[in-house]
Length: 361
Ligand code: CP
Image (cartoon, helix red, strand yellow):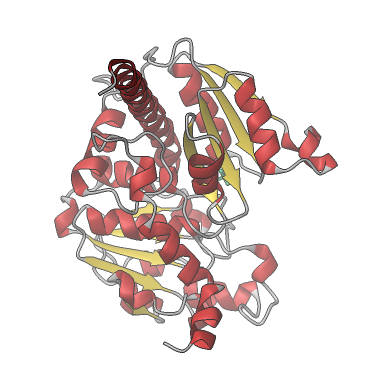
């Protein structure tokens, strides 16, 4: 390929996401293939995703209520949210407390990053305060990966959403919700994802997790302006017509339209969007009668979804939030365990190399 084409491609967000994904699996796993960070669902196999789901299931009692499990007693978890969040930040905090961790919410708006301190320096200082896990949300794609590989490899990094790239705990809480609520197994489901696919880290994580768990029929429904270039290579079918796309579906996932896009060349106005892409009772009736309605939140009612659908009997939107606690408990616990295994192995290797040097081998 000519170098000019290469360099044009280098800065295309989809090319950046693809290159990030190919390097994701190794840094987030220890030598035994166990999670020691949770950076993305890409690169994880079906068994690894099923392990996360099974671990999350273990935090529900027989009545379906969440339980406490003090697996992180004595650990310190720092929540670093460089972007706003309601659901992710709060459910992480609830999850951390249910696991018995010491929890610190770092107030980024009042931190020295506002005085120009680099991300690297902020992290090194927090690490010196004996953190065990950082949960991070950042506007830059690759921020969690950068922290795990280049800044603080001995701290378990959990990605709470990075740029347009990935939102892996949202992806996995969506999988847990489908696993718990859908009447059929993943392999038999048709799943429709509707809305701003182009700018959605949730869509990317959901598509990857659905594919890995065996869903064959994944449909993305959006106007051309809100679809990333080459989306078909992810193994999805593209529909521009919502009525065709939702027909006989088992799961309908709405995505948030980002307000800043309304009135832009990508999206003329919200009324027009609702007319063509709003999830209304009439559109829902085209799907299977027991189809689930999902949305990661925050929702724009009357723009991407009708209130009667969001609050209706087929909606599992609030169950997604509750399942988010169990999934976040699962990834925190698994990553901490994997990080301990990794650090033990490093100590053994160090000891081995010291012994070899002393014996002159
Ligand atoms: N779904 C989601 O990530 O919501 P928040 O932005 O409120 O965390």
